[in-house]
Length: 334
Ligand code: AQP
Image (cartoon, rainbow, N blue to C red; front, side):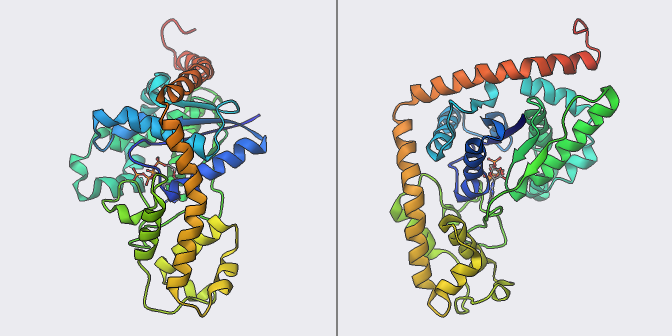
């Protein structure tokens, strides 16, 4: 059977980009029945840009709660926290020996996050894609549902798997990115040329899955637009990144084509469209938020789900790890 692995970092609250670009698709894939699904809270990734030890465990539970609240079903999937399966780090080390530094230094996410100060960036930020390759390959995943921003990392994973297979014999499947849905790259509400991101300093740039109805309404009301009238055609959206972003979000959440949204609001003021978009988002996000809050009120249940998932993940990972060691010639693994 085809197998999916995907994960999100507990670096902050999940936002609408995480939801539309990834999480919503995870649930569809789980329910579609064509894939065995492994969904992980990738907490080891969350320490690469500095973190607060007092909040990491709570954030890990919050991301697990968001998955479940959005429809991930622990009885149908393997749901666990990455740090509970040490083989992720073991495999990462082995794969590091066959990953070129030049390729890592060309990763857009590293360049964006390290900025001009790459000399001072931590090794973890630089080698993050190797840990991501290990996450995927450890489970022999065949498909990885992600937003556009992670496509480059999945491509690197394929290259690393190819190098391993070439040196030590065919073993790892070359995973395919699955970039699905109508909003594969949701942009910041403050700057339509930047992706919506957990690490953006401005909370007004994103809709968090934890936001209240009032917060959502205020963020959409204040979302940046331009002075031009509401666009009427797809061509009108060219060079209008903020308008294109809001209209794409409306279409993705409302289950419409962008053209349908354009014809619904053509000729009207942006304010009316924004009011409707806020209502639509509240209608969609509020039930997820309230399920998350209910789950987080009983954290011991989340811990129980994550512990049970870690056992299943461990069982899947152990034979792959053993065989990887064996092929690489390690002592006592023959
Ligand atoms: N803006 C986005 N639009 C569509 N998809 C997105 N994803 C992230 N941002 C967008 C997808 O969400 C998943 C979670 O990825 P992650 O937790 O590893 O975070 P990230 O990709 O590094 O992006 P974030 O959420 O903005 O976090 P920070 O700011 O910490 O980097 C992935 O499938 C990603 O494609």
